[in-house]
Image (cartoon, rainbow, N blue to C red; front, side, top):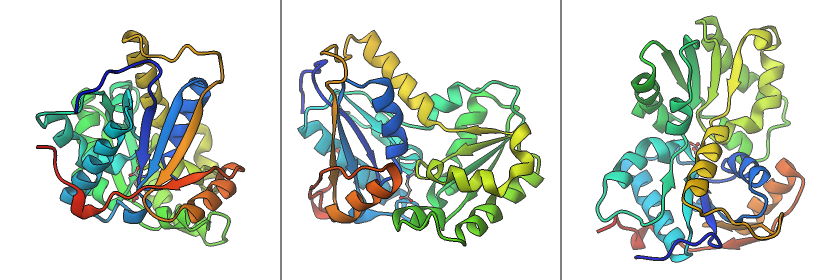
Length: 283
Ligand code: DGL
């Protein structure tokens, strides 16, 4: 599908669920007059326990839907898609005629050599792919990468259980061992995880003064701005004329409710059908 990229066109952003809103928030803060389409693939959540083939299938279906909406760019606000699907999507021919940014590479490219040991928290699928280590070390071979999967974290966030008392336990049990192994930086290798930052800080007070918490969201957003600027695709309409439209593949109501809990507002959320049977790898 070929379409004309215009500065007026929307920017697409997607994740399995609410996790990508940690990227969305930074995007809307930096680009308040852009039109944004946010898609949460909640019918297939969580992505972390799916196979690479499934993640590629889901991501392809989402990008095809984004193409049908006439986007000028898509941000993969999902590390699991970035690790498992992105390498195939960028090498597939024909590819999409809008740029697709993943969330792992922009952050890895920005790292300086002063980090020695990096603790990366991610989903099981992302950790299994070893993609953070491969990409970080391709840019900076001296950085040691300790990746750990935290399977309880996404369900805690998606089910609205962040404030429950055992959340601290579930955070501490993964973070402490990494710090004891000498990590001097901790990376949110899943876009859901910054939503646990308050609990994470409570879990490790004695380490906070000498470690860095890295959110790759900052880097994908900077890369998006850089690309749109260079290609004259920024929307220069009157300031703050932008908006975000929310779409989910599952039920709208639980997503809207969780948004209220997490961000203090209830957006309108539309349901969109992206059935697996209609999915296919681009041909
Ligand atoms: N937020 C996603 C990520 O960054 C996916 C989490 C999940 O659905 O397991 O990997």
